[in-house]
Length: 80
Image (cartoon, rainbow, N blue to C red; front, side, top):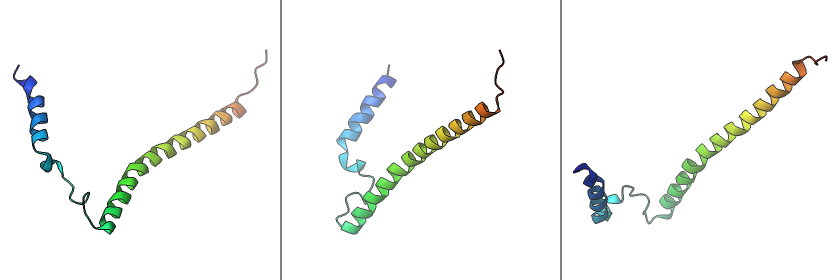
């Protein structure tokens, strides 16, 4: 029964201390170069893994179709 209150207490503690939630000092840097670097890095870290997953999907699809075509060419016709 006591453990049920732990998540609620954690949420209230975090809500009471909003300044402690700013873990990244670069996010709010007033210098334009630093802010631009942060935004570009964020974009890179967001889209690079998505591109890798998408590229893997495209490669697997092409590989599947290639193997499927090779299998059709090697299969002898049925006589029947």
